[in-house]
Image (cartoon, rainbow, N blue to C red):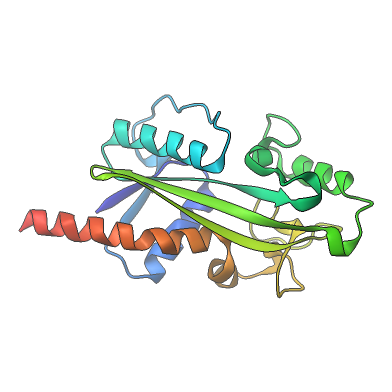
Amino acid sequence: MKVLLASHNAKKLAELRRLAAGLDLGIEVVGLDDVPPYDEPVEDGDTFVDNALIKARAGFVVSGLPTLADDSGIEVDVLNRMPGVRSARWAGPAKDDAANNALLLAQIDDVPDERRTGRFVAVVALVCADGEHVVRGEMPGRIAREERGENGFGYDPLFVPDGETRTSAELSAQEKDAISHRGKAMRDVIPLLTALEQTERRSRW
């Protein structure tokens, strides 16, 4: 069974494929670069749930494939849980990771370590013929004072998960998958994908 991940982000696609492979599902995950192009909707929702559903609905309507979409970001407690849904565009519309990280560091430069708390949040929406499903995952932690590590993307070089001294960008892919917000959300969506795969298998009998 094919499942569309409504994203062009190669790192997100690789992460989802890795998670699906690790759980030995009979599912092929394809991305937006693997299907005919279409006009992608504007992510103008007020919440992670809104944006995930906007993307998943559009992908399902156009491709006909069960479609997953995620909206994720970082919430910093002293910034009233911002950047939140604006995480990718925190420093402007260019979605520049380096600029976003630099701005965030500057905004909390004078905040003591014990108050630099926050969390990564991922909401994953699945839209398919039998309806819409939404799951949420969180990874709590704190914001470091400088970027560290070469793995991951986005705010990973700044984020130290609870129980760790390393940033998310210093963790191996397997270590990150085990505790990450997206990993948690994807593990919660796996039973839904498994049920879909079983339904499709029965329909072929």
